[in-house]
Image 1 (cartoon, rainbow, N blue to C red):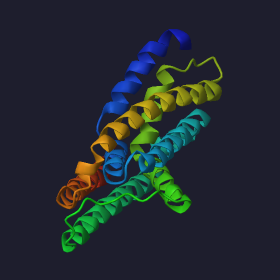
Image 2 (cartoon, helix red, strand yellow; image 1 turned 90 degrees about the horizontal axis):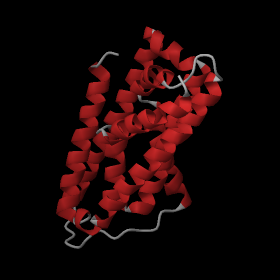
Image 3 (cartoon, rainbow, N blue to C red; image 1 turned 30 degrees about the vertical axis):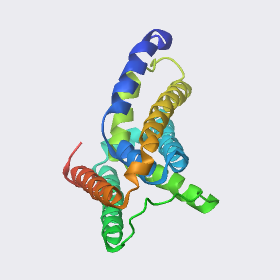
Length: 214
């Protein structure tokens, strides 16, 4: 298959996949709503770095081993579920602490420091790398657009960069839209409810990862 002729189909598939609800979108929404666009940017960059690592792993053929190995897939599934459950229960804890506060004012943002920036970035990387569906997705999706006779690794790496560019624009647009309503989201009562909803979504996704097979 000619890579150039298949690019429109590839871009359309990437848009549809990126826009589907999942751990990445839930994490970005929560970050943007609670901390604003500046704090959501490192999360988006971390998620995309994790995705690109999976693309390179798929191009090198290692993702096929993960997809084929029951043990490797089980370990990755358990780790992925644990990460999502941890983030979900952390949201529940934040909601509980918020309810104990008696503030009536909107929570004020503080500029994210370097340590906080790397924390948000690392959280995005871990969530993406701990997603067992990412390995299977790369195995099932990318070979449809990579010529068998061509440079598989180089082509996969380029397609991965293209997907990252599309997803980065999409996710930053989502984060910017959510952040515009940030003052409303950061009202103590709304913030508490959003933490509960975010926690429920993340825990639900974690449980789905834990119990869902390939």
